Image (tube, rainbow, N blue to C red):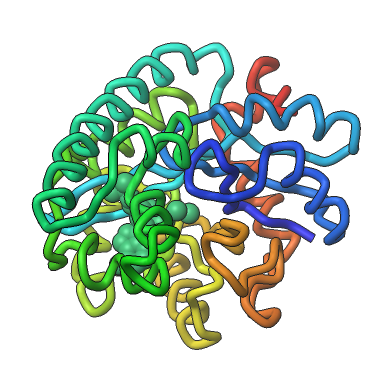
Length: 287
Ligand code: AMP
Ligand code: FE
Ligand code: FE
Ligand code: ZN
């Protein structure tokens, strides 16, 4: 089995890199991509465990970008290791902007009467503290009954405590990933709802390589639609569960929600063939 979308506790998942590799083995996953938000720390740590477990581990990333004021998640895969240092430096600037936003978000929540501190939220978020960690903290303190309620009432874009964060343009995200030798894929296109089809030509022009056709939030009809559109635009497809452990209950590695994800072997073969890093010695060594 193949899963090209997963998170560790280095971003907003709850499994450590070691636990995620163990879970992949238990679930019969042969190829796993770790796609933490804005960081490679999970992948970096998982490499040694994956080697021991003979798991085919792919270096991935998920970036939050903006297109027409919409938040668009962009996946990157198969980086050229020799071109990664510059990309990693750029990731540090994204992390700094998130931290600066977090300072303002704590102030905003405190002004709404919540007794929370930056230290408390950063203790839950490690290197990549984001809104899911705020949601968890609000739940642990009994201010909301679920993480979803924290998002719906306070943290989502129309929520009472929402504060803006500097996010790169979609086109910049695509360019940065491609400059690092990576392939790009639009994460969970279903989130763009009815705007998606209108936005696709522009995303394709920006250099987007693939659509994430298989995802735990997609119905069979959704997946069919993305497969058709990818074919029509000469694009590749990717797929994965978007496993976050206890931060997204009900989603299993590789199989998604009640078995609604199954990424065909051919998806991986096509991606590897298309990857510019595939033919270079440095890029071939992904695990
Ligand atoms: P951040 O990058 O810190 O702004 O947090 C973004 C993350 O929060 C996303 O990657 C999602 O995992 C999560 N998220 C954003 N909006 C929602 C929402 N409405 N409901 C649940 N989770 C969300
Ligand atoms: Fe996430
Ligand atoms: Fe996402
Ligand atoms: Zn994700």
